[in-house]
Length: 253
Image (cartoon, rainbow, N blue to C red; front, side, top):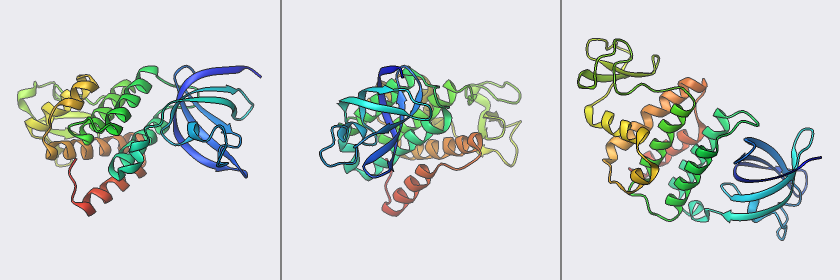
């Protein structure tokens, strides 16, 4: 069996047999991997800290027929503070769920891994002006990387320029002008459209440190989750839980 060394983010964990864990790793070099961590559920297990959900670590594993077998791991960042903030933890779970949904096994993207670890760092260190804006930024950048758009600077139906744009089409994957609006399209005001363009195009660091209108952030998150749900063909469990939490608590990120 070949030995592999790579940085990776734990995006899913589950109990396996008596003291083991079954992990899904989003690795830097080898894409999404499924791996077994022997003894990781033991209180003093050597792999316990590096196999927690959201942990970012240097892993060594041996490739197997069905699963990789982790032999060693060195923690880079646990992002532990995320677990103390239920909203941040739910948004991080949403990002992990989307990585799992949109990437096949052995498929990955080092730049996307870097983006996610930066977002988790900003959240865990409480550096973001608006936590939800970073999640909205991730939604749009992920869709762009996946080749799913959405088209924002012009009407997806007729090509009209930004000044005429008044709505968003889930079915057609982009903004639409007043002339092309259909009853099923979602109204979109110019302020939200401008923010969505910034979230898609600007570096994550810029998104982190800029103040955003809370109402626009929530509208953007909701709109893009509807779009993502249409692409996946099923709703995202983590985002549904996030919505329930924020509605119960009356929170706007």
